[in-house]
Length: 222
Ligand code: DC
Image 1: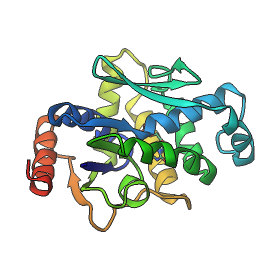
Image 2: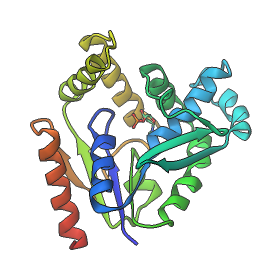
Image 3: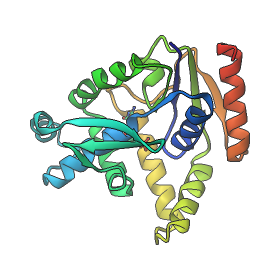
């Protein structure tokens, strides 16, 4: 069974690229960020501060997550409610980043993520896939880009969706998320020693996709 681990900071294009790659290669795509976002959403709805570890830990027994693919798209269910659209906001992204610093949340999601890697050829994206979740992954890619390039892409997506967020606000969020995700004690974002570094600051989507396919091909031989 082949596993491809893709890690990197917020806005590097991981999920867009991983989704497309999975489609092209016929692998199952697992978006682990969606799981952290669902936990973040649950905490927000419960009126808990996502950074308050004791408060979030008390909520974990009430959370059931399930991933399913519908018409080729991954959907995430939080206690059987499809929250796939609801989790795609800055506020939930920040909450996800906060709950991601909580070791109990990481332990809660670890088995779910490892179990998914046993179901077939997979492509999993996140922050600690190559370092913690799948240390023996067939291929590891650390996907990154400058904070400005990442903020610009996210801002263009928001513009296209008719959202009013300013570029400066998006850039500030990107930088704050980087600090939170890299600076935390529990499974911080870092490149695994055996991960291939791919900086896409000067690449468009098609070029990034081609570069990733090349990296996978060299290791898997497909
Ligand atoms: O990839 P994303 O933006 O959807 O992830 C949202 C947040 O979830 C991210 O800022 C940190 C956290 N996260 C994590 O800690 N570990 C993962 N494997 C995936 C996401």
